[in-house]
Image (tube, rainbow, N blue to C red; front, side):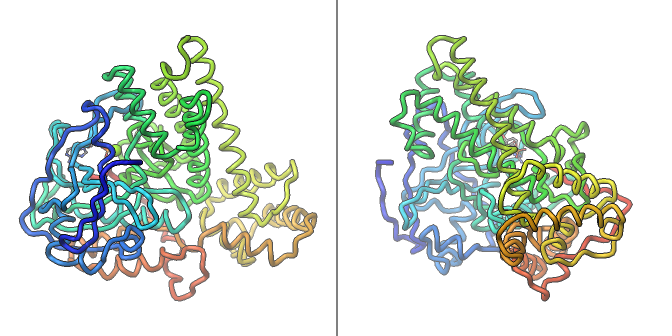
Length: 494
Ligand code: AMP
Ligand code: MG
């Protein structure tokens, strides 16, 4: 992407901003400055991420550096703006936009990559509606912990650079410490951004947005005869790969509204998300998802539904003839389900140490999942035990049924030429030992928010940084949570 690339040395953090989004037509954003906060204090800084962005961690920790992360100072080269977007929230279409976040610029990294730098919780914007534009410390730390855990699990995601407290309280159910999260993303283009353009923009504005998305994420489709159809295919492909990875680790996003689906294929918007413990496709954590619309087992279907909304939005770009455009869109979206299934099956084979393909594999996998559901087996623990060849004596592993299944599985492994070690290694690389278990996340947040003790979170972050390594010293993070008579509930990240 062209445009100005001023190297900024003021503050010495090495912010190196471009602002390509601000060169889109005016309807897509409103220039808005962050609202300064009383007393910024750095709580956590992601040094590894800072370095990969070309930022100086030491400078980010300084008073001047923290002032920027709090929105009290605007670094040179930054052009803060709130992005416009719409979205289907639980199926209902509405106008949204950044109500409590601002894009402050696109950092050009030393490797020449472009990352959105966004402050979340930085004050009101023209899109705030009745919201205060602020964020509470607990949910921002939760986003930090889970997004970084997802990254370590090898899942495409927005990242978290820092969390600062503001020295001001925010009013939610109770008064809570306010905070600002610095979010890093390939971009913040959403399905909802296209829905906004299709609903309230002109065809030229919609085309400008699509061209921008292509330039930014899929430049290789520019040469295609129908580049917008190629864009649709690419978006479908990335979502199929992403949702398969969610399913394979038991991640429940919780609020898969179309404004929370990123065109670049990254997991975005860590509100009510959580990892499933006991395997059950009906698992829902979000307190507002009373119908189970976004339950674990529904995620692939919902992704397909969201992609249909994306296809609808770009319909006029696909073909001048509307019925032809619809046909192209339907075929492209229909491909999602086979692509998802292919990726999921490949991932499941890996989790069972299977290196070649047999048609019966899917039955073998479904039979295991069926037993896990019936016997309320812990999803992560079951697969990790299999990978370590250490079946426990719980309800699943102790059963007659499991022994019979295990014999079939061993026979299946015997029908591939690779040695047993290769198979076991693949399994251990495919089934994490540690995920951000709900009780561990809650414990870290409680220590941080109630006691101002960030050491619990620090140790949790360490435990989650290498989720596939066998680390006995972090055994407590791999343990199955104590059974509770209360289901775990999450709330939209406010
Ligand atoms: P989300 O549930 O995070 O996807 O947010 C949905 C919409 O609500 C987005 O337009 C947000 O910007 C907006 N929003 C959420 N919380 C607040 C807040 N505290 N103040 C203003 N807008 C908000
Ligand atoms: Mg959102």
